[in-house]
Image (cartoon, rainbow, N blue to C red; front, side, top):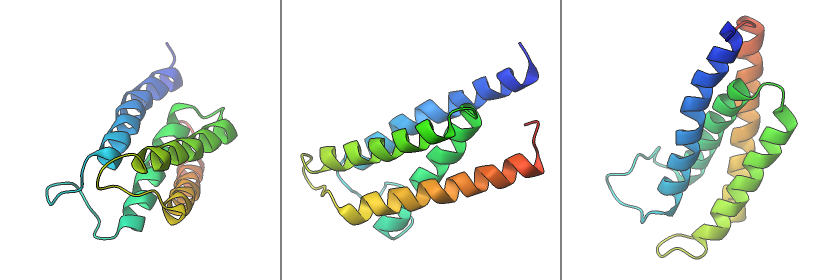
Length: 118
């Protein structure tokens, strides 16, 4: 196994549990012990920026598909939130997800230019 494929495997070991964690945190009832930035929209932005960075490091040859897939994932989460007690679906949350994906893409791009072999 090459170094880059080993690195991608390690990134994937972070990416998929994070995908699941975002889903769980998005659907469980809000409470004081949940991780929180203090503003709902920044929670979305941060979560999807992290997903973008991890996903782009995991699957570097699938940037467009990955980002569109993550945006669709955010839409699915919003739909599920409309069915969950104490949660609400909002278009502004989907926008915050999209902005997080753009931010994460930018971070990942900068990282790749700074450290292209990682």
